[in-house]
Image (cartoon, rainbow, N blue to C red; front, side, top):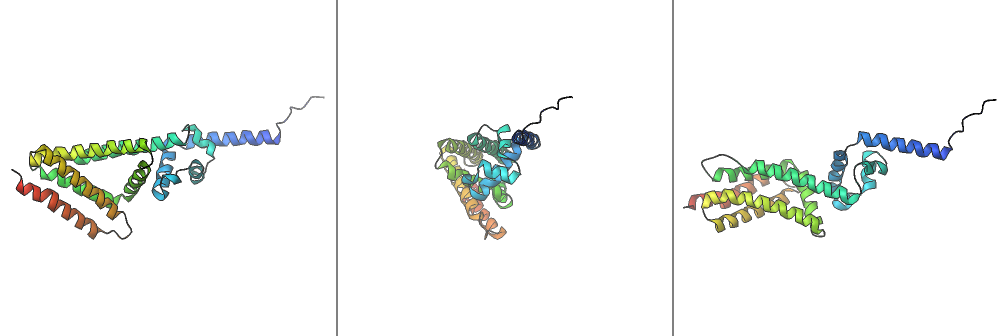
Length: 218
């Protein structure tokens, strides 16, 4: 009589099926899928909401799928911030360069892009606000934000220098302009914000920090 092949115990079969499910999920989900879910969690509830179990639930997979792409939670947060940094610098650089015989035009273009970006892509602003909140408690995050701020200010300074031809004045105007735009983002990141408000903020920044300077330059 031929002996039958022993069958795995139910618990073993269940574990194997679970492992196969995780493997299938890991091939369907990409690293960017997890980063997108983490980005959404951060803008909805701040970085305290970026939790592996919560992200796995939102994505409809087990927590085991996460470890196909990241070593731990810290690596996820680091990758999320790095992706934001790279995309932000690329966007800012493209917006801050322009060809014009009038040095005020590039600065006005920056202003238009910054205010429009705040109105049209509020999720980006909400993420940056969540990041700045985290930076108050995390020195590594604070360093990343400082790099972004320095890069933005340096590009602004280069345009103001062409406008006023004085290094110290250009740096002061760049700082004031940047603070005004950041403040505008805060004001526009509210349910009550409107196109009328954004146009008003843009007009007063342009009047006092671009047009007034342009008319008095040497």
